Image (cartoon, rainbow, N blue to C red; front, top):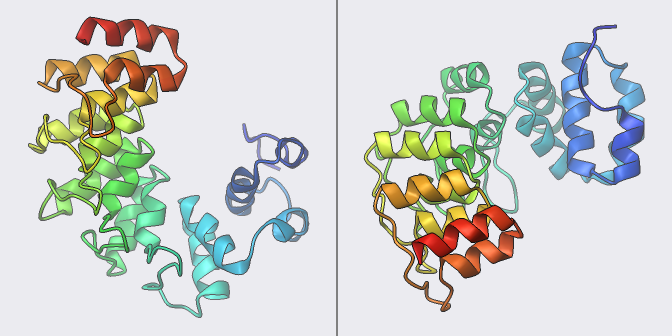
Length: 239
């Protein structure tokens, strides 16, 4: 059995972390943590099949994704989720596994495919701070400045995730540093929500300012919602 830093399945179950359980399952098929059947017995009751194959794809492991496509999707690499029309590439983009992304693109999956909220794989990567996959996907995306239905760019999603690296990537692809989404929030507001002072400072340096959003919330209000005292103190400087 190979060594791994994954928490034990018993710990996952005790904490009720259902998604993490399935990610651990998907990865275990690759690293040899436990026999697949043993792990599957432990978590199969948590999810419907529709959700199960999504988690396999989120894991970003080639073996796990191949298993999902074969056993849940009848070999259809272009299947999408019922809820949001999310593609396999979009799900895998959250794994930060750039090798998997290259492999999926070679399968013919499109970087600029949209889900029901007009989000691309780039948006999905930005939402979780997956900087390696974001950088790779943007090199193949014809319009890095694309917005979703809520007018969020990859910068907005990166800031909300508190990912300084993803924000820097977004700036390098000339995404507007001051644009506001449908709620009237710019990168500074969203970075404040994340509670990451470094992300807030970067947004401010690139021109985002703290005027109120459409709900009357300023940057201090956004920072307060994060519960991070340092972020709240930083926000007062920008007000």
